[in-house]
Image (tube, rainbow, N blue to C red):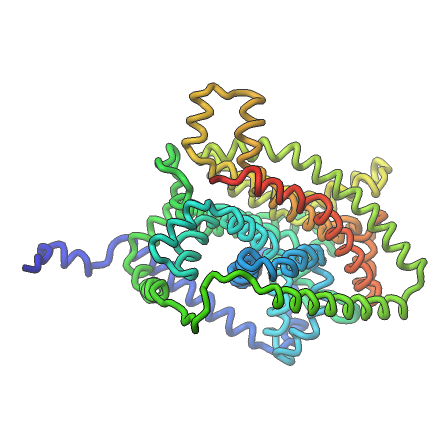
Length: 572
């Protein structure tokens, strides 16, 4: 006999709750904002010239909204890229030979390099419309967000405990089911922290993404980044203060509505047999869970995912987990070597036709100077932020306090420090080659902090209890428990911080405030000057030299350290 719930319970189920009222406000607000943004992106491109950026603070809410939408769009594409590219690299040994080094190169290509090459293509997708410029800006922000997320997800998939994988096979899960029910949840906590860092990285480069200037092409999209660029050009400290305030408000909104709920939600995927003493909390996550509106909106997706887990792909007589064919391996590597040789031949022809040995030597020496700065700054940042990250990661309530502060500091564009940097260097007659260097690590050192916090927060409680029971304290605890536990996460953060520092060199090695411009000797200044002059050949050479240094550093140092950490400190 079917038992029906009491009438009072049935009635209550269909009545709106207080959370539904709040959720309805957010959903309606989002629909209105998206409709307004859609109306503006189909305007003709000439409308941007007719409505130049105004330093009136009354315009900042609209600018902040436009910038926030671009960042969210870039974040969606970054997630799609992460779930596909990183998964392919982690699952296929053959594909990883190409995909992982390619990821090293992609993260080393500066954002100005991407803009210089792709802006014409994206503008041609929507001729004469603002939409083309918007796509170019979103792509530029995407290039500052995607790489560290892909690295984090790749690292997590490579370190999934064998017990979990075997359990999935015993329960008869398909590869698709294992991915969404075991592997993706296992990778979720560090991915969430890297999403935060990616959002902050997008803020760091938002000036270059919204105020696109390549040679004779100049496009200024409404946004906080272009507002900052206009404020710097006008030498308006009060406008810069307004921009900092607007940026802080947007970061707090992102923290409350997006990242704090994600951190609290991802806590359920920690590998631990007991709940944490200090579980992260979020009022927005409570709203999402208790609101019937979000329940209705998410139900089709939930049903589709549950249905997809039961699908078993046709095998056509193949074994699902067959060993790779040596013949196919030989064919794959032959194609790869041939393709690499063709690209190198084309690059040699391009460089040889446009440059002589002196030009290439000049770019290489400047690259060496930037290389030295990156190595020294990453070493200093590691010494400072690794112990702090472990301390914060072991205390979830402290992490909740630190989280928005670190996001804001990581998002703080180097351009906003230009007035202080230029004034101090000129006043004290300091050497720009040395004193502009800290600007390079201003926005990238946080990759180390965020990844170490993610690693420390994932430390199983059993391990902490065992260390406590055996009275492992002091330096012994850091040596045997703390540092080994976060080592894979630290290496991931250090790799992305290193690549980000190379990119930041373009912003940090040429600093302007009004009519005063300071240059540091380095590859970043080389690329920045070439971009301002619209010298495409020098841009390509600068990007190639930068990619070469990053790949060499990663291959000779970071990758061996990464593989050592993966083998030595894997949680099994």
